[in-house]
Amino acid sequence: MACVLVTGGAGFLGAAVVRRLAGRGDQVIVLDNFQSGASANLEGLGSNVGVFGGDVTDLGGLLGLIRQHRVQRIIHAAAIVSALPSLSAPSHVTRVNIEGTLNVLEAMRLFDVERAVHISSEETYGAFRRDPADEEHPMAPTAPYGISKVASEQLGRFYRTVYKTDFVNVRTSWVYGPGFPRQRIPRTLIEAALAGRPLHLPRGGDARIDHTYLDDCVDGILLALDHVAHPFDVYNVASGEGRTIAEMVALVKDLIPGADLSVGPGPYWYDDRLVAPPKGALDLTRAKRVLGYRPKYDLRRGLASYIEWYRRGPLPREN
Image 1: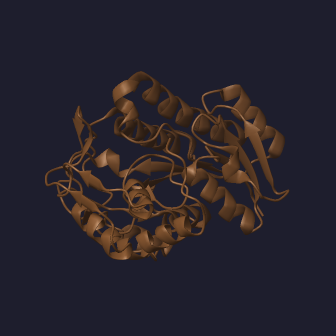
Image 2: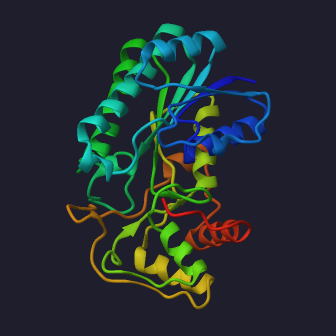
């Protein structure tokens, strides 16, 4: 099997990808600086997984790792994710995300790496002008995180054109599921409900978002990694349905009887300074037709699976 490098492989999504790759027998190399990822996410893996501390912004270190292990393919998940860090450290977000991607592209060029799958985002679209949004939707991001993903995608297109580098983008949307590390819905709703705490969100109930269960997202990433030849360089990978936060709250209350949850109307705010642009569903036509991608989890099933994971173990500490 191929030797696959997963940058950011100790993070929420990266570790799930690593586990799937390891389980099917690939040789996997993990690169992570462990600032947001955790070594605990990689516990129990076999000898076909090697874990290395390092930063994707260190080109020399990245090149050495690829050369030493004869890496053939890359899943580039290392990034400072979500719009919220953009407010406190926009220069840091853009430097890490763009420079990290540029280093991956340079490594591919120098060592003839077969393919890289870059984890991009629906944040590249900004405010949805149509719903569902397909891959040809205009890109008009509203925060440095989305801007950095647009820049990363465009760098990939430059390398694809000039150096024939096989760099493929997977645009995800609000991935959730076991081990999600940040205090964001649906994690906050589920933890409050299971602990018997009331949680009343003052606003955001009207926001429509494509919430994607972790297992579906990993499926789409690996389909993009394995596909023989790509006629496109970007694919939406999501659930394909836009559900409001009010609908999510109602589903959690139905799945956890007695939950004291509510949400007020209006748009979703990342914090008091930045409102999320209007969103909706992602159009999955391209991923279904080319990759054979079929999401298995609608929102209800995904929430039920997430809740069951919590019920099998202790509630996490606040962080």
